Image (tube, rainbow, N blue to C red; front, side):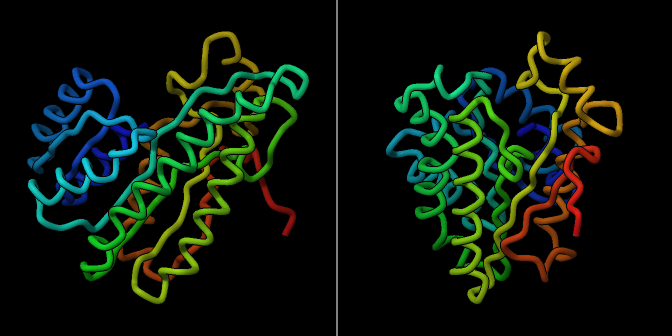
Length: 232
């Protein structure tokens, strides 16, 4: 979904720095977005769990743009669909590294750049499972729930400084994160009767990054085809 987020922001006038583990695919995506939108797109090959990830992103931003207005934390890791009995405690660590500890360290490094601007924004890409965990994939469920807690803590600290921090919680989306063997199961669980599209999630990200969301902080926007409808 990262490409869709970058495209949506570029279409609305942003220059973007795209980060991914796959450098070749990243370059292709960035060049296509630049060609389609006319906006500047830069890239950095990045592992968000690396100790120097934040510094590498900050250096790339300062060199390319000299300012930072929006951060989208989109890094993810696949479900493993395992039960408690099948999940030793060490299996949780990669999920926590990618969803919590990596984004925390990067946010800590980038926050001064956001504070220096007129209206900083951070958007976490969470999951419906962060709001309503199920009895499987414990690493994923625990990490996404923890990420929402982190988002709210950050939002509480920085809202008075003009940095607005929120999350988007997608349901099942038609990406490589939904393997073929569970595709039909995922579709059947969506009241709307289909999977979401990356562009639909990206539209929510673009909204939270925009002036139209200037009175939102610490909120989670659920985009899930009706899979999670609050009772109140």
